[in-house]
Each structure stands twice: as C-alpha cells, then as structure tokens.
Length: 58
Image (cartoon, rainbow, N blue to C red; front, side):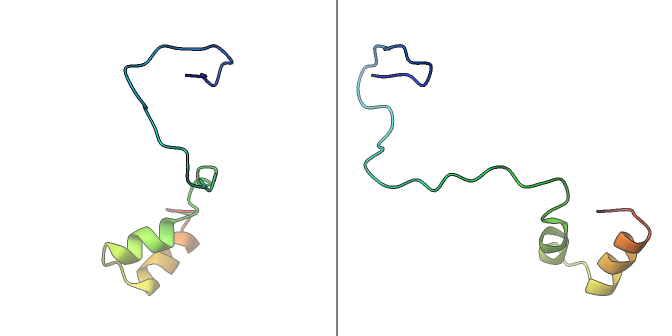
C-alpha cells in the first residue's frame, strides 16, 4: 500500500476504502463554532451575546 510519505507499507488487507469522494476541510478556527455549540448545550442567545460582548468567548 502506498503511504502518504511516498513509501510503500505492508498491510494485512485494505486499511481504508477510498473509492468514494472525501471532502477535505480544515479544522475550524478558534471560536468558529462557539454559538452553535453553546446553543446546542441550552444557552440562551442573549447569554451568548453577553459572553461575546464581555470577551468571555470569541
């Protein structure tokens, strides 16, 4: 099997199936998902806005 370093490695069988398209996406920026996460945890929008105003979160 071809390794991402360019070397070949021996495996006991197929490690991963890459026959489907994989959408590559980088990790989110720091604080990018704060509102969605806090909302899903039950925080009210006014509380979240207050946290942003007070720079408790980004």
